[in-house]
Length: 87
Image (cartoon, rainbow, N blue to C red; front, side, top):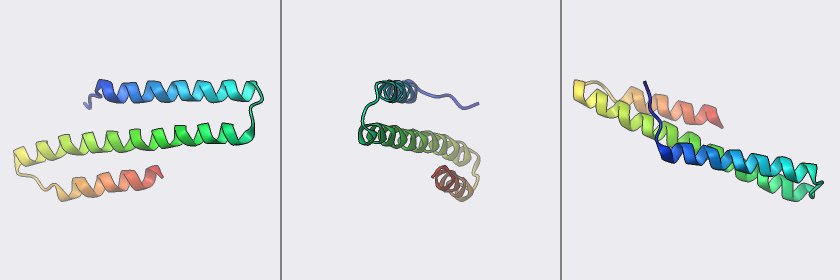
């Protein structure tokens, strides 16, 4: 089972707040450019959160594979594939 640390949870809560902010901006009729800028910030934060999750998971999996003498190359390939699919 994968466990997620407080840093990731804070990142996601920050994104949640950004999304609420975007919704408020839309309800207030804010200018399109401003709304798009905030949505872009949310997307950037999501990309960073995905990279963080993949990196932490890869780190843990490599430790486990090294302990059992397994091949870590496949793990790296899977991590790269996840990052590519996320875009």
